[in-house]
Length: 315
Image 1: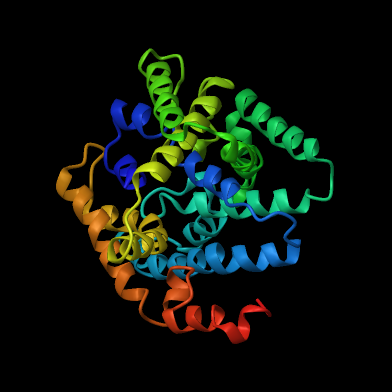
Image 2: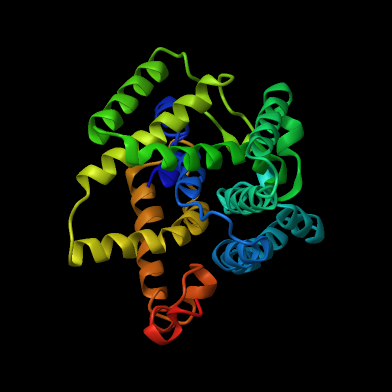
């Protein structure tokens, strides 16, 4: 919902209140759920299925009408536009506004996994080095194809998420800690001491401070959610369903905004349509064989086979 809101309204509130954490949170959670010592080949396969396959499928589905309409309206050679779309990264706007994030997360995970045989400090040094380059010249990092340059400093949030997971069991008052982290971060943002991040453009805000605040908000949201979202049964099942289908919303909401011709000062109607239309469609897709291609999630029958007693040992 925060990702969609950030693309509907381009104003001070979304910049300061949402951009500070809405993308870093994904990388932080990747680290929080990081599987130790997974082979690189397994990582490549997993990230390809869950990230690259939906990325490529939706790239084709959206690009066919987009390129067709662009050529029809402007009567121009389509190949420069095709190459720009394939290049990806920070240059892509609507209808591909969030596509850069997918490849950035893909390469961040692969880079970290390829470094796991090195001493632990090596990954931190490389990630911090990438962050320093972004502070010095963000245009250099954002110019790489498929957001590869952004993936290097983004590794820092994955590392921080993994480090937070290690200390999480020792926290005696998680809810109070989460609220305190969110409160302190709010103060730093409101007083202008922490500038918002725009990771798509390799802008990591106020040096060091914004990264710390983004991490604190991510950790605070996680702690508060862990202590307050305690429902079970159908409510829990639908929460999981919405989460599992949310990736399609990330990939397709900008196409809805493109079709609606939403201006930078969008409306609540734009927000509602960009959020609910893709999400309802994603829920329907989740019950079909297209789920693996459009959501990056195995369809129900395949998930049942993967978790059956007969195949659990092989998995």
